[in-house]
Image (cartoon, rainbow, N blue to C red; front, side, top):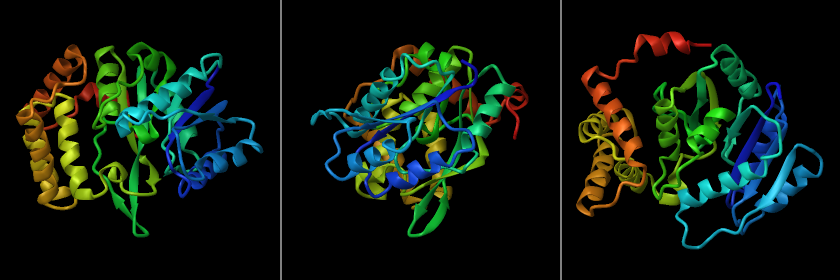
Length: 302
């Protein structure tokens, strides 16, 4: 099996972005054994674009999924990913990469990520970071070394199978949930900011239709993940000064979180996962977000 890796990409109406994503994978210094692109019921030219590349690149496989009208955007995205994983079940691969259809990767992205997995047998989930492309300019996105964004996530296959893959959530956060479940089982989840991808539009805006609404929905997402109130307050205050729109964005996050409480929205992740995540968050507040020395030593910089 060696160090083969496979990629799964969910795609819904990505005709204006997916060609650049495909080109960035074709240009990788280490190519995947197979890349399954799941068309999640697109109504634009997404299918035609994928199929045109699949005809000339044997490792690309096109899969069409029937998208259920009642499925929430993020939940449908997860169902598409898990459908792609099922199509890989007979392939002998060691690492599973999940890649959004609007990402542009640096040419050595997967080579460098696989190098990190080789260096640390305990590394279960890894990624780089991404910057948003807004009106032709790249904008930095806040990141934490313990968080790996789903859009560019890579799993050790054993870790992915042990946690059971992604939990479908209405407002997103399935990548955060996956990292928590991995740490619960003794794996490390770590991001490497030296590896920078480009998100061809601000993350999450499409389903929210505006940045302000997205910030509010991100607060609802935190409620769905059962985020501890102290951690949520600290996180929102920090983002008031570091994340656009300044002040307003952080307050909208907190407002969405409180709205979930007022509506008594149910927590959508397993109770034991929520409890573990909350304990991590309390420790981060008490120790001022300090990263333990064992984690720093375990997965150092590139």
